[in-house]
Length: 75
Image 1 (spheres, helix red, strand yellow):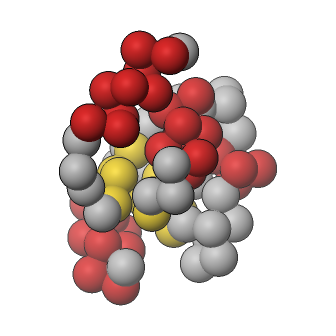
Image 2 (spheres, helix red, strand yellow):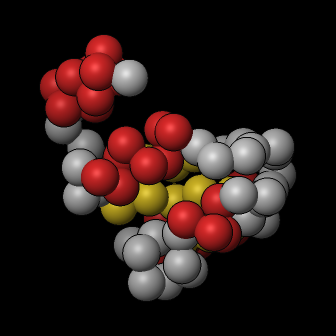
């Protein structure tokens, strides 16, 4: 996990898009949010327990490119 943390710290970005079709508790999502970065994530299984839509991040429908693009535009 330390390696992943260091890797994320070296990347300079504003928003992380995570497009999973199946997800339990995403460690990547937790690490990105811990760094204070904005996330757009698919609304599957464990993700809505971590991301509160339009408060702590944005949730998009799985497989919907339109949802991801509109979420990105509103961020």
